[in-house]
Length: 378
Image (cartoon, rainbow, N blue to C red):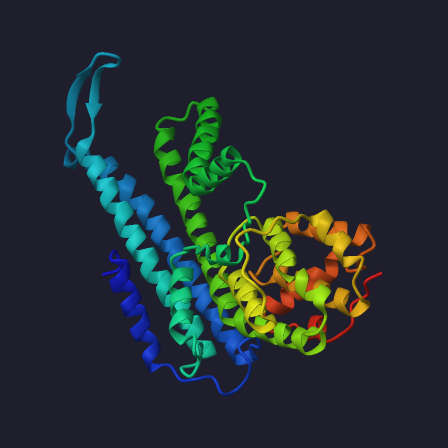
């Protein structure tokens, strides 16, 4: 069922039909009971994903080590390599195991995301974007990225060469396989020094830790993504409505809103659904025109901020910080962007403050201290 994406999405949608609406608190606030339940969901998910990865390696190597005759081969004479043994049966067996693990992990991720949404009673059935929220939760479970930000002229990859983009993307996709090959190489060199008989046998099984570890990391990412996609939309609405209330008549402020989102996107270097929601909410509430392309960089934004009122600068600073936080993590690259703002005298916000807001957001404590308290800008 899960190999057919449309069928999987339909099944995922039916799971939400039995959920109750949240009438207790805001989605961005997780009470102690909700935090405890989500922690348990995360722990179980990590163990299951590690188990799937470990079983995949054990089932890959154990049968061929114990019963090699179960995997027939044939020989082929190749002009450039001579006589070559083709392990066709083992290859088909590997493909079967890989598909089985993908199926299991996909099912696990769907259940994790649904369980977290159910704990938070998200989305509200009365929400006009109810179906869209379920669709984006489904995308989160499959680790899919949409590029809806392009509708507003926002391009996170602006200024990045095609060659660099290709290399980075390829390395990310192959990271588990490359890590496995590297560890095998190092182990073989180390064990060979001791001339251990049959050391290759142990090297194969060491892959258990590699793939179990990557599966656990992937599950950790899915859990974090599910949480921020549940909590993010209401936080975005909260800040945008607050900014509109105090700055709706500030023309200069409105003119740079999409510029801020473009600089944030370049700092992030990736697409994220919450970034799209932030752009969508700003365009809708402030009635901004959609642009085909936003050609602005960090230096140009800093110059524009210098001409604004203190209140508008406060708004831009809060919007920028939420943009950094809204996908659930702040990288060292993004910290360097924020540090440059501090060194240029735009604000006095420290890395420790950013990390505290990141922690408050991802643990469901909300961002009231960021939204409603004045920031020290200079």
